[in-house]
Image (cartoon, rainbow, N blue to C red; front, side, top):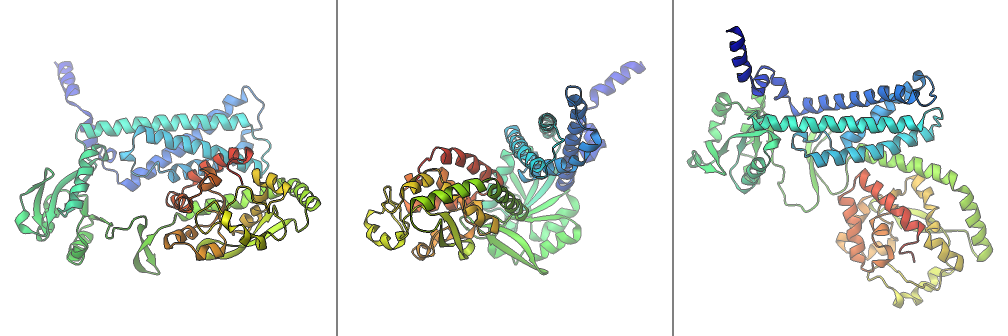
Length: 492
């Protein structure tokens, strides 16, 4: 009898019951959920490190584990930073498996490059390359499995009706309806709309996108007291901002999280963020990358890469200088004033590829300009020396710009710096190119180079880079630059 009763109990115990008894599985705050995921991911990386060591030690002579342990913090910092940067923990509940695997691929490739660079720069000669490879492969595989299992677990929880966040929407207009559609199409986000609120009391009881209007502004205190609400989302017109101030204050006193739809202005590419200016809250509209720590990584990479390159390529500099001096009259380096970040002027350095009086002869060649716009491009420019053609074809003439990168005037990747006289003839929208630090290579270099004769198309490529900038995009441009330089694609 007892056995039969036990079997009946087993049949009635479901996963939802476990969630009920252990609510932290379903109702973690987004911040806590992200922190726990990041902690487990770092534990997995550490586990791969300690598992990989004895595996490699069996087939290869390794230094003692105590020698390797000093690299563990660097490994954890690399993995944790890149997983965060590529968005693994941002809205994870809405992630799809292909997105997760793509993030893992990016993290693995860039992480391996960064970690290997650290080993090379600081001459950690005792570390085994095989150990690094095995550790990265194991970490990638284990974290990928963990994330896929977590996705299926979350989906199952949604399927059985477990909702993570109960949301009250203030507003019933087109933007609010669009938000409701997003929620309905993405059940995996785990958001339950408890109802809508509108300023107009006559709308109470209406159904909008299958969501019921359960009250007006004055009903919000009663709604929050009688219904479980985790967050209130305000999706209202700009003209209502003054009307909702008291409601915001009430939500604050009740400890209920508040979100306000921030698309107050229909700007085309600027991104809005809330910032604090010495205690004064302001809304900032930025049209350039503003992820400071990522820009810091970009600058550190520029500094390290250019410094190492200047040392390694010193023999190339010497040989090139001798050849230029032996084959034509004039200085080795060509120096020219260029416009940099936000119009700052600096002196750009190149190996000289033209005759000494090239600038004075330019006016006689303007009729042969192949670029429609304020830039001069000519396929068979008679001012270019014989050795200059070779230097240009393989971009050797660009190498002195590494000094500009090292000084901070330029970056490895970024829009090509224009001449100030060209900038004076820019259309108003062209000038946004100056909103980011210029670089040696860019989308224009790898996406057509001199095949592009439309100046506006060139500008669009530069602005596309600015609007979509990421460290990953820089990596892709660098990888595409290598064959472009080696095979002299599009050089003039």
